[in-house]
Image 1 (cartoon, rainbow, N blue to C red):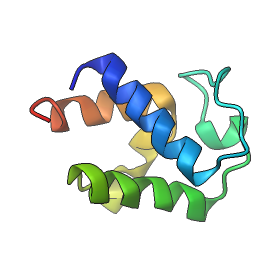
Image 2: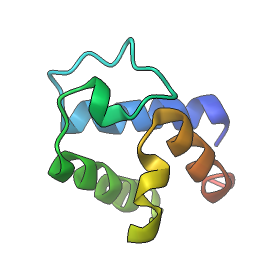
Image 3: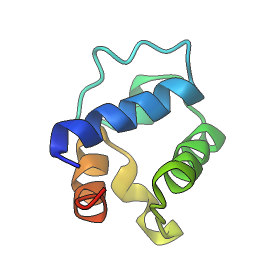
Image 4: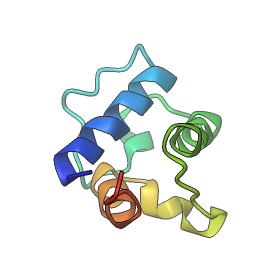
Amino acid sequence: MKTEEIRAMILEVIHEIVPDEDLSNLKGDIRIRDQIEMDSMDFLDVIMELRKRYGVVVPEDDYMELSTLDGSVAYLEPLMKDI
């Protein structure tokens, strides 16, 4: 997957977890949870959905890497390059 595809995929997963949130103005360098109503269980649901859909396993120690949209893309890009 390319960078923009990964970004779109992340936004799609977030939208499914918190469908009432407007993601159109989500900034890449600010924590996602600081920008939208998303609690810790929603965040875990996003991580579990990535695993379910794409087989991406994110160790708990790396969860903070996914706290921002830019961080998520940077973390997932090498893991999803062959998908």
